[in-house]
Length: 102
Image (cartoon, rainbow, N blue to C red):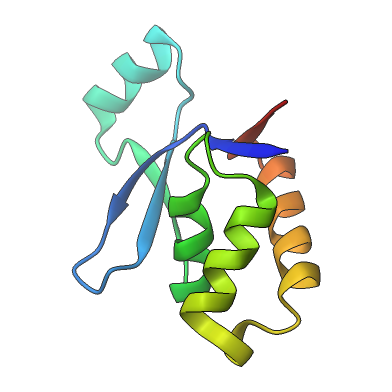
């Protein structure tokens, strides 16, 4: 299975991901309200490991490929990698931050 991001995001100066969630929804009305009231996004800040997973959710890298990248990058700091990755991806799916491709 291949996860794909569904939300806009930015990379901080520290190299960590900040997910931007539209405060008033993605509809034209929501965008209109956000433009008038300011602060159009709620942000979710990810740590180094979460940021690496998020960036790998590119719609072409499989879960196995993500796990392999994490093992190469973080080594034992990411252990137990498969359990942590599965839990994090479930949370991203529950929050509608990712969708699955075949």
